[in-house]
Image 1 (tube, rainbow, N blue to C red):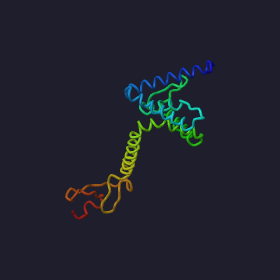
Image 2: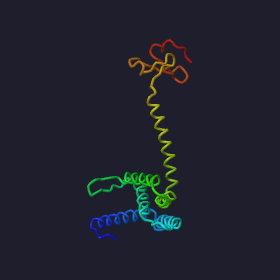
Image 3: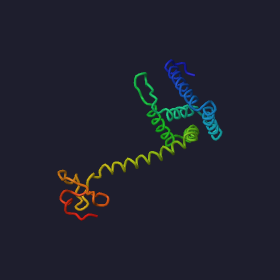
Image 4: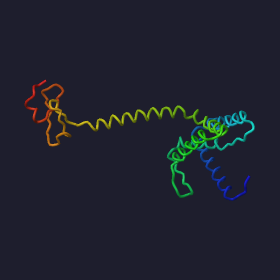
Length: 196
């Protein structure tokens, strides 16, 4: 263990953040679920070491999975980097996911297995929520596209000449109450049309 004061300070803050996030998760889930979350990551990490017994494993990814769970449940939590720079935890989690993706892509087999072992518990606990968010996001995007298309539609359109207030801004429109459905007519056709 290094006794360098700078390393000790980073170790202290790392343990403090782990305690803070772990306590928040335990308060949110209860002791049993939180312990189960940690236990799944721990057992998966031990399983990786059994598969590759001549390699050294690290618990860094287990701490990362606690961080990702905290960020998923409390995305708007603000963390002050260097006690100055306010950053929402969801952006730090995004950077962590990108880092895990790079480790999966470029890392050796042990690193890849460690990342998968430590994120297994996250996927088990939040997989259903992620699927629901993806579905909800797709529905929301579709609704926004429909809304945007409807905003582009003109409010008035003459049923005879198809002119709108956009094609001729000075044109006036009227609706005929004697026709079925009260269709819209421009002033050129309101008096000359046959009632439906």
